[in-house]
Each structure stands twice: as C-alpha cells, then as structure tokens.
Amino acid sequence: MDRALTLAAAAGAQGDVPVGAVVTDASGAVIGEGRNLREATDDPTAHAEIIALRAAAAALGTWNLSDCTLVVTLEPCLMCAGALLQARIRRLVFGAWDEKAGAAGSMYDVVRDRRLPHRAEVVAGVREDEASALLRRFFDPLR
Image 1 (cartoon, rainbow, N blue to C red):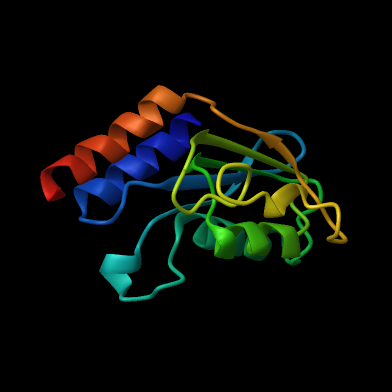
Image 2 (image 1 turned 120 degrees about the vertical axis):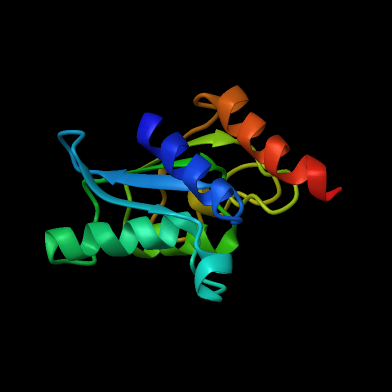
C-alpha cells in the first residue's frame, strides 16, 4: 500500500483524482503499477487499476493474473471491478471506501458476486485514513 499511496499522491499533484494501484505476484513483488491519468491523457479508462493491470499483464506475458493481488487506494468502480475479474485477480486490497461508485462492497459488490464465474477475496480499509485524507485534500478545494 505504501507504493499505491505514493502513486496516488503523484496523481493528485498532477491534477488527477489521487488514486494509485499496484499489482503484486504470488511472492509479493510489484509487477505492475498505475495512477489515475484521465486528465493527463483525456482517456476515460485511464484509472489507476486499469493501468496497473495492463502493466502486470505485459510483465507476465499473459492476461491471466490469477496468482496476483491488486492493491489500490480507493475501492474500485464498476469498470475496474470488471477488469480485475476479467484478469482473474485472486485478491483485492483497498484503502478508502467509495460510497458513491464503489463496486467491491459499498454501492455494489461485483467483485464477490456469486453469479459470476470468478470472484476475488476482498481486504478493505487498509490504511483507509491515509487514502481518504488524500482524496479529501484533493476534493475539498473543489467543493
């Protein structure tokens, strides 16, 4: 989560919503990382999770990340929840809950939906205070 928080802070400093993500392999080594780049790239899919998943798939040479963990500072949205399921991510670890758009337990629970062929273990609230503080510092001046 340390690296994800650093990436989130960098996103916020560049004018993007401060979200950072890393993908680790079974040994815990970081094999992919990303931060929000929607504003920087004008790409609506440039969420931290998507960028980290793409980097991890490239590093491993396969889309199947079934032995991997996605660590992200904010609960994934529907798009990112779907992407991590398509990548067969085994475990999702996240910091802050997203009560407005979260898809791993707050608004929706796509990641653990028994109707789907793949589900991920969810570990929520890891360093939640720090992740939430980054988001507050970013959004408070905009409100």
